[in-house]
Image (cartoon, rainbow over all chains, first blue to last red; front, side, top):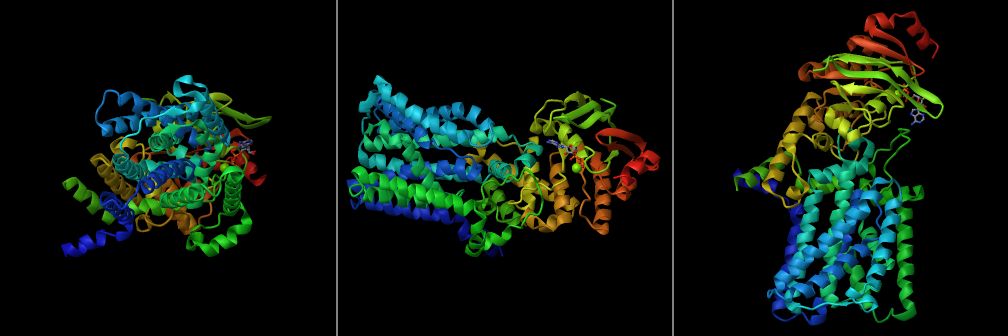
Amino acid sequence: MAKSKIKSNFKIKNHLNYILIGVVLVITFIMNSIGELGRLDRSTLVRISFSIILAVSLNLVVGFLGELSLGHAGFMCVGAYLGGYFVNVFSGFIDSPLLVYVISIMIGGLISAFFGLVIGIPALRLKGDYLAIATLAFGEIVRNIFKNIKFFGASQGLETKIYPEKEFFIITLITVIVVLILCQNLIRSKHGRAVTAIRDNEIAAKSMGINVTFYKLFIFIIAAFFAGVAGVIYAQCIGQVKQESFSYNYSIEILVMVVLGGMGSINGSIIAATIITYLNILLQNELSGPLASVKLVVYAIILIFAILFNNAPAFNNLKNKLSLKGNRKKSKEKDDEAEWNRIDTKIKMDEMLSYDLPNDDDVNSYSNSKEDN
Amino acid sequence: MAEYMLETKNLGISFGGLKAVQELNLKIKKKELYGLVGPNGAGKTTVFNIITGVYKPTTGTFLLDGEELKGKKEEVINHKGIARTFQNIRLFNNMSVIRNVMVGLHNQPEFRCDPFTSMFRLPKHFSSEKEMREKAKEILRIFNLEEERNNLACNLPYGKQRKLEIARALATNPKLLLLDEPAAGMNPSETQELMDTIRFVRDEFDMTILLIEHDMKLVSGICEEVTVLNFGQELAQGKTSDVLNNPEVIKAYLGD
Ligand SMILES: Nc1ncnc2c1ncn2[C@@H]1O[C@H](COP(=O)(O)OP(=O)(O)O)[C@@H](O)[C@H]1O
Ligand SMILES: [Mg+2]
């Protein structure tokens, strides 16, 4: 009896993410310790790692909250410069590389989050595309400021002290996992529900007493924090922070990862970030010089198609054929002048939320067992 | 304690040249079931939008339980105790029925749990989530929606969507409940059931309810007092039976 109950409560599907992550981690650790992973492999994995953090955190804003941000590289830039700087400072008097690294990550993230607050307060209050414009401007302004600060090496860039690369690699992997779990936990909570409600119907959410401004700002700041964290990892990985790397083009690259992976899908972002980063590394030598701009053309084409696919009525038939979920959406004959659902991604949030709470009875026993502990 | 739950004083709003509502003086006693009626375009929904903070009145003010709420933001007005439903149903369509209600419970003090507690999955997160679920189920039971709790809100039949909207509003624990044409699109038996539910809510929760309705049968069936609006102006006010027999009111309706 008891056995069957446990069985019915444990659904592999609900824990697939954690199982997969665990498997990947174990394999990487084993390969790392038996010396199968070379220096280059580790560097590749680190680059994939911070790309994943960037894509997932941007997805919180673009996919989950439904606001367009075009300055994610700007927040990363803040994290990279300040994180790199504090690594240099702290390494002077703290012996443990681990401690230096963790403190720098926190500081880089926090300062970046502060910038998120400063940009977000005015921009998120306005409707429409103001956030996109404000973040775009922010990204460009920030890197130009760093370019002109002598303290941070001006156009030479900032040299950062690099810690033993093997340990750094392990810490980076752990950081990615922590970030992913935190994002997931946030989405699958009452706060995630509030944000989903805002995106579903902002007017109704307000009438339910949901503080829309707070939640928009909160998600934006959290995303900025994680972008800053990614920046600190980047600085450690490269060893020299240069402002050119954080241009508008890089923000677009992150956006392409989000769009390709699927708005609101964390798993999609992880996969898309991995593939795009890996392709970038593979094609690094092929696509140098003038050919580099080919990449940007490809990105532009991807974005245009994604937008068309999501918004043009011509694709609706195709979409319904492609997805079984098409029929979940009942056609709305209501002539509601303020139909809020701008993005047709109609994110499968409810499904995502329901991993955690499959149905009430499961949930009760789950939380009961939690409390018992 | 104020004498009236809701009091509007000379409330008015104009959109450009159009005076959508003028000099409205509502006085709604506690635990009263109050009707706001009038032909299409009379300004009824606009009154709701003013009282819930969607629009700012151009003249006058309004008080909830003696407290002036004019100029407050929508979410603050909800926290103060006004909840509403919409004429064009506004459910969270991509969420299940029970989660719609749980959004309504979001700000209740007993379920408070800050974002970081949730992010780090501290014990408070699990306990508040579980209690919220129980509470939501309890509310759904009142509206006979417990069976459908895991369906998507948009997949409910029309009549049940209207009921879910009321359930969700009730979850915010209001002092005053505003219902905008709750029976619109319902068949007679659904309407009858709705009337019973509205009465039950009023008696069970000692709720003050202000409802907009087109269906005169429903209004005369459950409202103790009504105000009739016509072209934004108060045409008549008083006991339901008196007002609905008022020749001017009948003329306004027939002339529509
Ligand atoms: N935001 C707005 N801007 C301009 N006119 C409006 C607005 N909202 C309502 N109105 C006008 O106010 C009048 C009353 O509308 P409403 O309150 O919806 O009527 P009803 O009594 O049918 O609910 C209508 O003439 C409508 O066109
Ligand atoms: Mg109306």
